[in-house]
Length: 465
Image 1 (cartoon, rainbow, N blue to C red):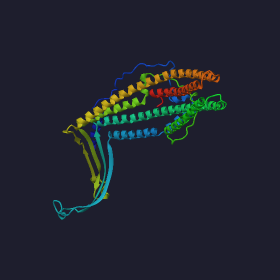
Image 2 (cartoon, rainbow, N blue to C red):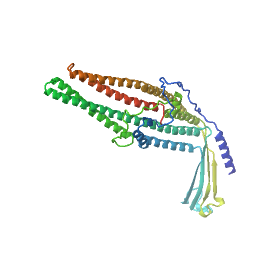
Image 3 (cartoon, one colour):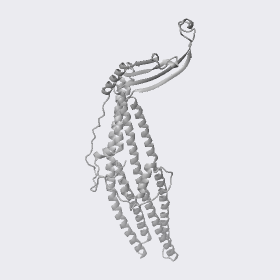
Image 4 (cartoon, helix red, strand yellow):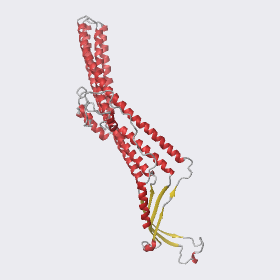
């Protein structure tokens, strides 16, 4: 037993000080821009990660919280973390001795004529005998070259990558719920504009029917008014369909069957969030997809060491200690004691290039993962710059469309006065009102795009995951 303890101590010291084959991970050099292409003078540091609350709509806040609790993608991502946590625990367990126990109890008969001598010529030997055993066995692969430690490093990185993937799912989810709700309120307003326009056209059409009956307008002008009214009515089902489909989409995001979605603030009442003041270097730390890509790179780098360790001998320690007896009453007596200690060593001599192929494959995966990591970073910088440009230019576009709508309202009012006083035909009225209707719809759509641009900006910066 002293020799066993000495061997264990030696193995433990060698194990903890043994070398690690394969490259140690070093974070790649990143070409990080110092500033963004578009800068907003009103940026602020954001301490509240729940950025969607800045829209100041309690209904939206409740929808986001409901989605975080019941969305199926979030639940799938959480379950995937449990899978990788289990794999990490299993892989890490190989670093430690594996201890087991067993027992046997049986009765056996041997042949009386098989063997070197008959049973009757052998003293104190009987063909029938009992066999009782109790033993504890242990095995331990000594990680001289770091194969198990590299495998554990890779498993840990994969587990952390799955956690970052869950955060990416959450970030995408809250952005999708927020933008879908804004789009829903935008469609609601477009439906209101369309219904109000149809009601206005209906009023004009009824007036024209009376004027036609008294001979004040021609049949052509009456049909112009009717065509305008029917066209407005035809637009109503389009928006009603879009609203129902958007509600179905939000329901799925909430983890529910399709149903009606409650409303809060109108699209005009929603408050524009603040532009976050994060720099490009902070985005690298914020975005979970970048952190996930780096953990994947760490895992791929560690797997090179796992493959290279196959070139070296594998050393294990096995031991067994127990008792064996044909008489159960003497099973735990001194003479029944049994034990064995062994240190098997296996080493590759000729593998036909199998190990070299595994190393080459691991290095190829590492290179692919490296370039994917760099690509994710570049995509992140692109998305932030795109979102900054989007919210900056969309704000200008909305201001111009607002001025256009005000001008077209005045144009439509004057066109109606000119027609009413006989200075122009109804065609000019129809033209001015169609321009106004389309401009109001476009302005409402751009208003929703601007509100969504802020959500996309927070997602691009990795805030809220």
